[in-house]
Image (cartoon, rainbow, N blue to C red; front, top):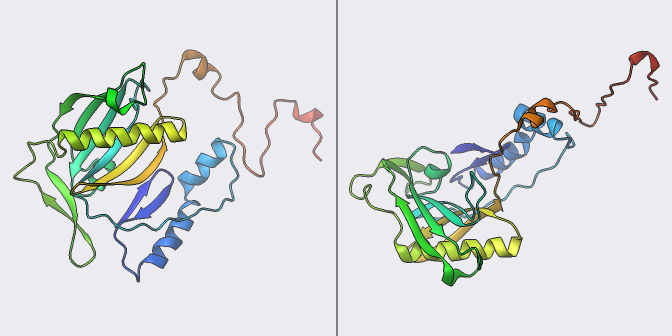
Amino acid sequence: MKKKVGLGFYFLKSNELEILDAVRQCWASVYAHQAVEYRRQHGQPINVLVGVVIQYMVPADAAGVMFTADPISGSSSVLVLNANFGLGESVVSGSSDPDTIHVNRDPEAPHDPSKLKLGSITVGEKKTRLVETGTGGIREEAITDSKSSVCLNEEMIMRLASLGIELEKRFGSPRDVEWAVVGSHIFMLQCRPITVAETETESDLMHEFDSPMTCDYEWMTTSNIRYTSWL
């Protein structure tokens, strides 16, 4: 199953014959139009190399995403979990309405797991989940018997939250973590900094084009072209 995340591609449940082709497509995805334009606009080199990670597919009972701070406001007083039954792809892709769980953190001791307190829980519709097939693929199936219940119990929620604040402490900044649960075991699949939505001010909009879009072979100047010498 081919998916796009951020500026590159990733593949779910590739068999041995498909892995090499999947790796090649991951390499090629860094030269997709969106990826190249992103690097241009942020002054990054156009020609880059990318590393491809191959991971074992965890047959998750439940999975999702954890933010160690509010992903919208950036507030560090709350930890947010989005979770669904089955593989976490249904949460990441937005194909199913997941449970949303808030865990409150003590501002005086933000990295003390004993100070964590379970906050609000919003039960999502969770109409479907993704599961592995016996033939090496992935299928979507309807959730009928447990969609009205939270897919994580309180003990598992607090264990995940404790791991989240430990990761934040080790990395030194709020984290966006993808995780999976199999029975009583927790698997951390990915950990990266949170990208907080920023509100543009009037000043930001007025000076939007003050900085040039650069790449390996472009320069920008505001000088009169008659008096510009090119070396």
